[in-house]
Length: 438
Ligand SMILES: Cc1cc2nc3c(=O)[nH]c(=O)nc-3n(C[C@H](O)[C@H](O)[C@H](O)COP(=O)(O)OP(=O)(O)OC[C@H]3O[C@@H](n4cnc5c(N)ncnc54)[C@H](O)[C@@H]3O)c2cc1C
Image (cartoon, rainbow, N blue to C red; front, side, top):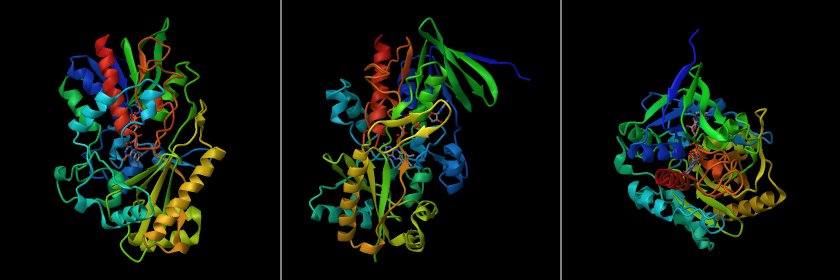
């Protein structure tokens, strides 16, 4: 049997999603000796990348991860984290992050927007049906806008034609993926171990001294004076709990998501890029965007709503979809025995009903048949708020342990109710600056 593997570095980063990739890139560019440990693998060049098979292979529990309440969580485990399967939407961090919690990322956000050329898709690519929905919303007094994107059709190797299957992984190359910033970090001397599942942080006298886990089944210990956990909203609290920090994972946010569908006589939103138009309701605290489940995934969700919604699968190309992202209250959490709970509070349910009624009006205005409208079962793509700023972390993302930081979606003090990645990257840049200034 192989013995324990021993590694060391100045700084260890655990997880290579937007949080981990950003902080790894920024620190290695400044000459820090950095070790990046990622549980998943790099699937970008594999034949199955961006296919239904791929999505099964690289999602935790083959996409069958559910909360006790039946909410389906999609948690990609791979180099680049969830940016491999995201819709590449970019939203500014909420103003409350600065005003209520003292975390100002203004300079970093501007830097990211410049660096990654964040902007809406060109008008001809916004999609005919998606634009029809946005115009219907505008006609009803809701100010829909073209959604800024981490997406550049000019980067496409082939045609910009992935449609809703964009969410299975980017085959055409238009989407920015955090794995690209891992590539940058490696070019600046960082070391990467894939297949490295970190189990716990090693702590001595209140100071982080490294991590322990398994690398392809072989136990390893990696030593460093600074450890940054970026294993995502589920992964980071699990590692902290295994390290004796039991307040991690108590309560979570999810931006609980639902899609409201209606059948129209014209082309639907499925054959178009996802989330090209959005609208935010500050009073109801939710966001709406144009979106349809990929073709083969649609019936797996619709079947839980009965025969009528399931049969609409045969008219998938004519379905109009509006996605609701709700700013849900902190509830449930990640439990040490492996369970995940995310119950909706009564206030969540009330606001969700309000959002559903708005979607219904918009879909009818956009030409959907009233009788065909239904809301699919809830889905969770933003597990977050499990190691919160102002609670388990200070404003520099440090835990109570010296040298131990968290930099991913778990740090959000409240649900964002909007795309998370721009906020996470900005926090990663801000943390790197803080560490370099010490
Ligand atoms: C289908 C889908 C669509 C989305 N669309 C958008 C969008 O359009 N815009 C947007 O802003 N956001 C979107 N999101 C959300 C966004 O992608 C995530 O919120 C974001 O990627 C979270 O970043 P993170 O750094 O917290 O963690 P993740 O991206 O989850 O990365 C965590 C990484 O840590 C690794 N890891 C986990 N446990 C361990 C361990 N024990 N040891 C080592 N490594 C570990 C994982 O493999 C993973 O690579 C979407 C998400 C999904 C699933």
